[in-house]
Image 1: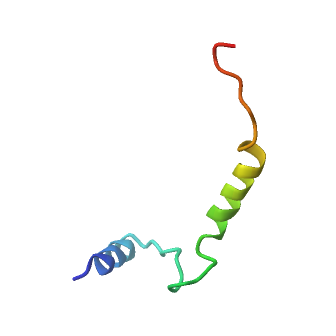
Image 2: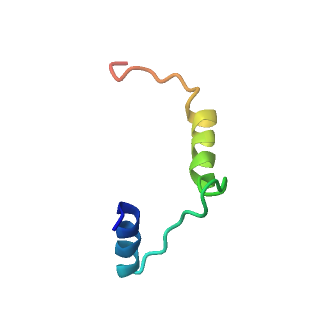
Image 3: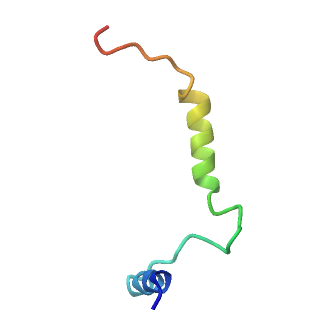
Length: 53
């Protein structure tokens, strides 16, 4: 039994539906990509002062 089939079996036993789609689907990561785009835009450009100040 392959590692991926063991993983799918474990998910099925816990009644967990995997969130990934087919291979090469660009929509699997949309939420993570949107989060990091916002993070880089809003937070990534801020210059924080040192704690000592």
